[in-house]
Amino acid sequence: MRTPAAMIVGIVLGPCGLILNLTSTLAPNWRDVSRIPDRASDIIQHQGLWDICEETVSTHQTQCNIKDNLDYYSQQPVQVSKGLMPSSLVVLVIGLVVASLGVRCWTETPHHLLAGLGGLLLFISGLLSLVAVSWYTNELYSLPATTGSTLQVGYCLVLGYLGSCLEIIGGVSLTISFHQCCKERKLKKVGTNFNYPPANKQVPAISTPVASSVDQRDFEMHYRTSMPRSYTNTLDVMEDERASKYSYGSRLPCDSDL
Image (cartoon, rainbow, N blue to C red; front, side, top):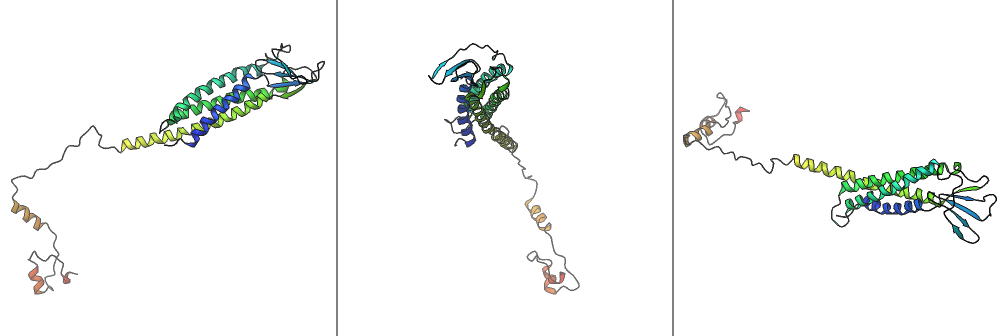
């Protein structure tokens, strides 16, 4: 049996979403702050969830572990994203393991229930990361920054959106396996209902022995008299039809009876 196309889509998009979300979580580029007053014009500050780096464009030098003087890390969107993004990655890894055991490309028949559960976990993981990225994007310009500086969206947010969408699409593709699982259970249920009698029970043989006291001659007479006869009109019947009335050789109705 070939692996269904929906399972292939889910098992391919899941790892792609994992790579994108992992990069988005670890990289310090959720927000770019440029044109900082009283600083060189070619300095760009990259702010992430775990670190803040400064890049000098003219020399291509980057310095990380910049001290947070504006309480950037204490803001609620940053704190929530710090909790949701790692949780999304953990749920995603568990979902990929369960989905792999359900798809089972190395066997002929997949396990639809496990594949559907794995897809459900992928869908939940995509929702968690999507909530974190969306909330941060909504509060991007309200987070503390130096007055007069220019704020821009970092590439980590773009990767987060893409990874979340891939996880949601892959999860929905795998959850279609629930439909096939329900269909198989209905077929099994119908099969058990029509399996009568049960295999562990034997139908008793019905045998009706003929009584030895019944005479063969009486049986033949009963057979003869039980056969239906056609009524004849005694007033208009012809002589030859009257003679055939008492004979057992002719059993067809007469023309005068019609």
